[in-house]
Length: 280
Image (cartoon, rainbow, N blue to C red; front, side, top):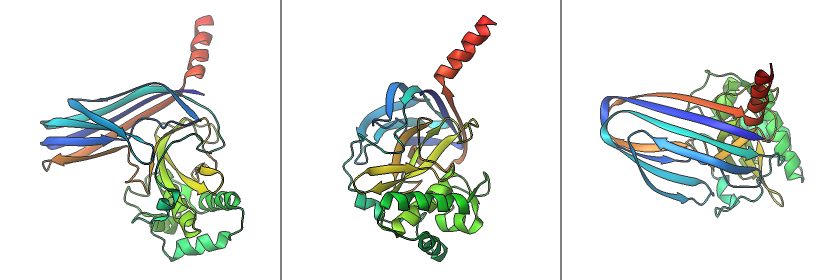
C-alpha cells in the first residue's frame, strides 16, 4: 500500500517562551513492512540539530527554537510503501534486550482489576496464542470512545472506566502481557483506516508483545487486529510518554495550547479517483 502522510502539530504560548529544545521521533521505522519513499520534517523557526538512532531502533532528530517564541509548528510530510507482515516486526534492528520491556511504569502499573483480568485469560505454553487472547480480552473490556480519558489516564483507570482510546487499549494490553511475563511495549504511528474501512484521520497507537522464537508482534486491541498494510510505525517505548513522537523542554512559563492535524491517504486510490474524474 502506498500511503501519503501529512502531520502538523501547532503549539501556541502566552506569554512567548525564551527557548525550546525538541526531540522528535517522527521518522517511520525501518523494517520489512515499510519502505520510505520520501520524508520531510520542518519546525517553524527551528534550527536542526544532530540526529541519531536509539537503542530501540528509532530515529531521533533534535531541533532548537530560539525565542521569543509565540508559536511553533512541527510539520511532517512524506510517502511510505507498506505491506502486511501479519503484525510481525521483521528486519528491525535494535539493541535493547526484550526483557527490558517487562518493567512497569506509572501508566502500566498493575492494579488488582488488571491482575484479575490477566488471570481470567489463563496461561498456556503457546505464547503467541496467549498474546492474541490477551488482546481480545482488552477489546472486549474496553469500548473505543474518544474524550472520556486523558493523556495521563493509567491502564488501571481505563479498565475501571471500560472506555477509552487507542492509548488506553495499548496500556492495558501492555500491563496484562507483563503480568504473564511477556515483554510488551507501546508503539506510536499512523493508521489509514479502521478495521471496517472507516477513514482514520489521527495519529494512532498500539502494543507490541515479544514472543520467543518469533520476535515482536503488534496487536491493536482498539481495532481487534494486528497491524497490517494500513499502519505506519514510527517508534516505541515503555508507555505513551516514553514513545511520544514529540518531546521537549522549554525556558519560560507560557501557557501552552496544542492542536494536531493528521491526514493519511491511499496514493493509488487518489490516483484512480483523479483518473475517473478526468475521464468523466
